[in-house]
Amino acid sequence: MMEILVTIVVLSIGLLGLAGLQVSGLQNNQSSYYRTVAMQQAYNIADRIRANAAGKDAGAYDSLSGTASDPGCISSGCTPAQMAQYDQYQWNTDNANLLPSGAGKVARNGKIFTATIMWDDERTGATGTNCSGNTQVDLTCFTMSFEP
Image 1: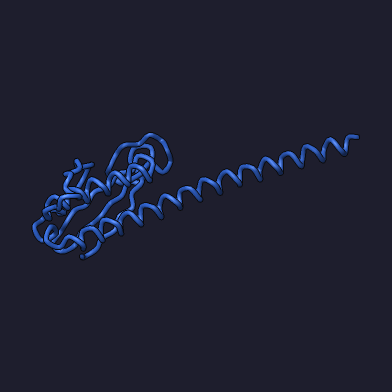
Image 2: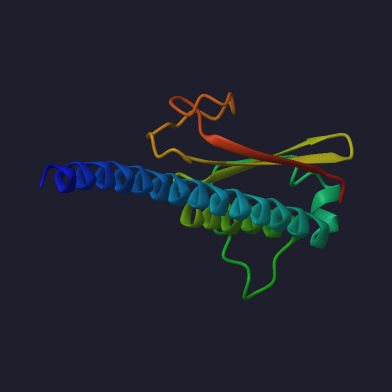
């Protein structure tokens, strides 16, 4: 009888370890998914900038951050500046919908654009945008530089 009790205790401890391993695997899988979405969103804004060469040349994409308002010109035809505003609106709306506390910004330095996508990977409620790596304070960041 005592052997059965010891066996059940040992088996229970092993199953608890297996459950912890499962939880850790699920968290890492979700984090990987968010990183994949962030990478796709970085390519998305890069393609939007490439598609609007006139807006890019005019500097409409030089410094994007936050969610712009919808210019409402898609059905009637947009100027390059309005298209850049719409791209910013749509891109950051998608970031917010696809990632927890998702946001993005774009900066230009010479010919090189840098897209940074930020999200709360650890779900700590962090709101900082410094990309320090401290998930208690700052959002997790994915950064991609490109030349359109």
